Image (cartoon, rainbow, N blue to C red; front, top):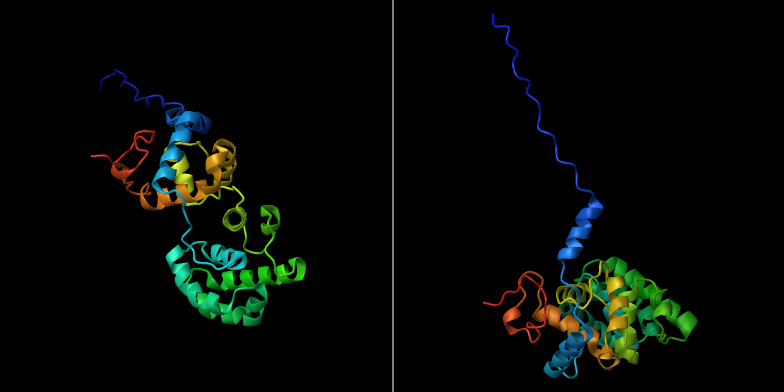
Length: 245
């Protein structure tokens, strides 16, 4: 028997784990820096040139029906909401009439929408508060609207922007995507995005900024395959994965 010792089989030293904070920092360093103010102004100038008077795609007849339509649009398409509310708004255009219709009656109109049971409950509850506390009128205040059942910052901001001309920039998934792709700002949440945009967008463009950005994200700067070849601001955009042939 040989008395030679077999060489020990040592495992190679493992690489030290990279701290999560370091990974996050590295990703942030790779992300494009937000455009400067002059570029932002040019972006909105072009969006305005392409669509001088942008409009939302939800059908409504007054501030109350707008509030209901926006509340119903969560996790639903504008097309789907318009189909559901076509018959509803023909007979209901005030909170008083909504209360008379009742929760079950409302459910029958909106049963094609996601979460229609919860939405019906919230619309009846918010209608009751409007009648009891505000004389049936929709308050011109994001802060007050946010206290209504089923109404968050986005819904409240859309309503005061469209109904009352308040230059709020409500942020949905489209606006969040466009903001971070260009980028107008680098943000982590829709609320962060709204606060950043309302500070950064020049006054002359802020009133319609919500509509320009949402329509741009919905029809051009799409999630899976942005149509960069027909984007009016593609030469100003810093998104690294453009789809220009």
